[in-house]
Amino acid sequence: MSYLRIITVAMLGLTLSACASVETATRNAPLETPALRAAAVPLDVQQIRVTVPKSLKVSEANSYYPMGDIVWREDRPGDRHAQVKSIVETALARGVGDGVPGGMPAVLDVQVTRFHALSEKARYTIGGMHSIHFTITLRNPETGAPYGPTKPVKASFKAYGGQTAVAAEQRGITQKVRITDHLAKVIRGELGLPPRAETDLVAALSVTE
Image 1 (spheres, helix red, strand yellow):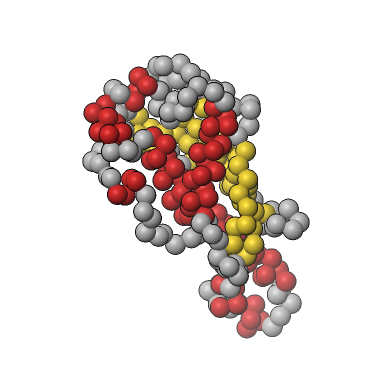
Image 2: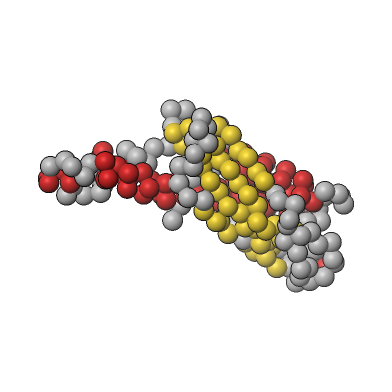
């Protein structure tokens, strides 16, 4: 269930509670009546706030499966938390786009709980999974109150390995490109935004896994 659907259900609950005293015919109306479906309005995401807690453990071990919350190697050695934050911010901004004018104004709070890409050893041999987890909360921009509960999201997907990884890199499809593209699509799905034709490197320079 997408996050927008969860929020819509919560709104419907409030609407039904408020209407509890109306006449029986209205009280027994199906949930798909126009008045109730109107709660599922488009979102106008006005701000995206990404947090990567310092409590997440970084691993620089070049093993097949490093034991850490953050495994990231495509940027130069440095603040991995900041690097992950930048990747996620870019991905979500691309996915959300410019918002929907006239839609429900919202602030999107995202907290990364795991960002496990591939080590060099796994990348150029057996491959593996990009294991990416985060939570999302939509808030009222004026009050900061959440529109609904915080939802955990698992956005893991298959990573390239071996010759496939090498061929992808030669076409400009790095781990960062694939992860950014994937997270952009994931957040659109979670927010109930329609798919759109995106001119990204993965679509333009696709390779066979």
